[in-house]
Image (cartoon, rainbow, N blue to C red):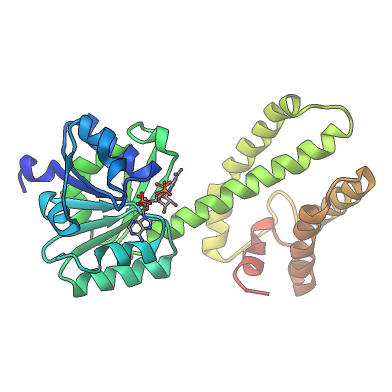
Length: 290
Ligand code: NAP
């Protein structure tokens, strides 16, 4: 594939994110074709040099690769229902579940299209900068064929052949993000009862979060091995501190739901005989639904 063919790209869906994607391709000098249900949203991009396509099929034909960025997967199916996709390569950056991604890959194959799924871990203003992380999964050759164009979006990465991986990493990242933020807010609520403001606590909280992040490679090794020797602390020791956290939250009159959840998971693991093992043994609690 020549540079000329890899540098023509189509963006379907020009909401807040789609406009940022198309803008980044234009800025990088790629021939960019756009289509949106509400046509007026293309106006600014067209003024910057984007080519408006009259139909979805013509939009898909214009680019060597077509990116989709819509509200959800049902919108993707609705938009592509009548389009001729034979020979097209679709990269669906619409947020969804791993099951939706795998089903969309099968659907695209039945329509004669190549398909990569993706997930954007950034806000629109970050698109086009290294801070924007864009994940992809599906056939590696298809990712590599279009990686030079995709690089205009930010830090692009390939996760594997399973189309569900990009949404799974997306969800795992959100689980991390909200868990860390909730933990910080819990600590902030507790300290504010003593007149310590959020800005004063933030550097300490950051230090704790960074310290915990450093434990992950070693803890991951325990999870993958399925062996959890208490090298630095046993779960039952942690559980005593958890009881303090619950009691302190209740005494301060702040919400204790998160501390109680943390404690309850540890108690279940201890009841199952794992009190003498190290914290990552809790993976068993996370792996089974209650
Ligand atoms: P948005 O501004 O609400 O745009 C939604 C887009 O979907 C519009 O182009 C809309 O067309 C189109 N659309 C919806 N239903 C459609 C249908 N049935 N047929 C044709 N087009 C349809 O949303 P956004 O912020 O751009 O988000 C788009 C995707 O990016 C979502 O999956 C979102 O989760 C993901 N994302 C967004 C962000 C963010 O910060 N914004 C960050 C990461 C990921 P109209 O203009 O005609 O309504």
